[in-house]
Length: 142
Ligand code: CA2
Image (cartoon, rainbow, N blue to C red; front, side, top):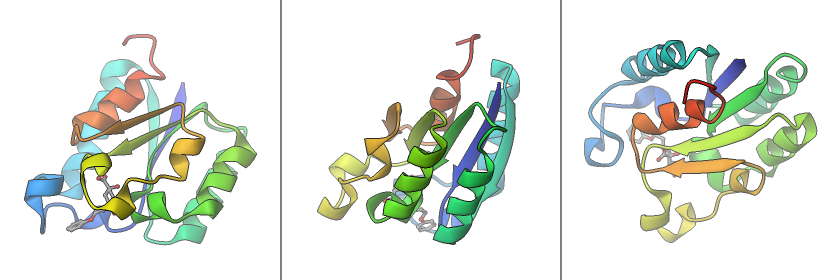
């Protein structure tokens, strides 16, 4: 199974501020955690991060016919991006949404997610572990 993991804006800044919300580890540590988790679960994984909505749309489009699943943390675009929702609908690749924090217990504006409208599953508030949980959705190893 080939899985594309997409991280949205500012996740590359992890670890520098707000450790009480997002944890103290940096983005490099997150990427290593995702790769190690994929190895353990017998999945092939590609990692992509961008701060730009259009680049995220482009990478979702180019996943068509190439990847079996998408794991996405759209970060702030979660709450605003019809374009990302439409791209996920267009490619119809099974998608699991992840958030490090529990978006349902934070500010009102974070409670709504466009991506949830298409995601098979949404995992919130588990920190790095949430990405492993999302990968598990695609794994036979479980
Ligand atoms: O909890 C999550 O994973 C989020 O997707 C993270 C986003 C936020 O906009 C979403 O509402 C929930 C933020 C990404 C990282 O933001 C940083 C903030 C301060 C320092 C470093 C990163």
